[in-house]
Image (cartoon, rainbow, N blue to C red; front, side, top):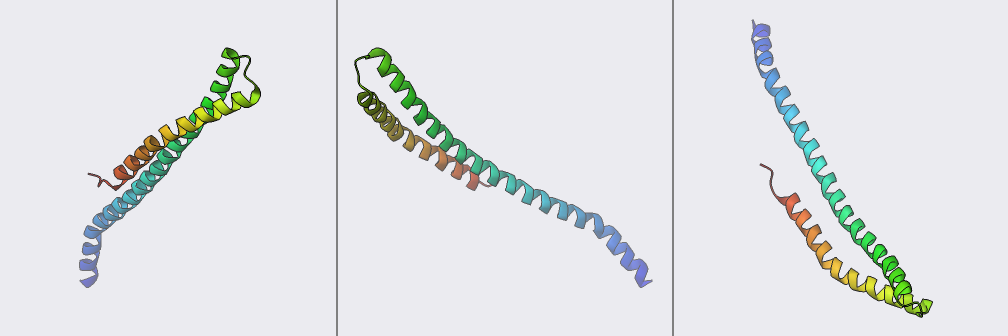
Length: 111
């Protein structure tokens, strides 16, 4: 008789246990996906920032060389460096805000 009662209890609790285990596993998996997305977003912001700085340097050097053919190589490099520094100082606060927003989203409870 005890075996039958125990079988009934295990049989009725089994699906609930499996459902709870599945729910916990899915929650852990989703949390891992969120963490990966957060880090990917931050990395993308940094990559865009660095790409822009690299692109502006080349573009400015080319433009100065085309429009001021008498400019020597040092002047071309100096103007490109100044433009890159100016862009970097403009982009950094915006990149910081983007990273902060990503962090804020990551701390927002789901649901």
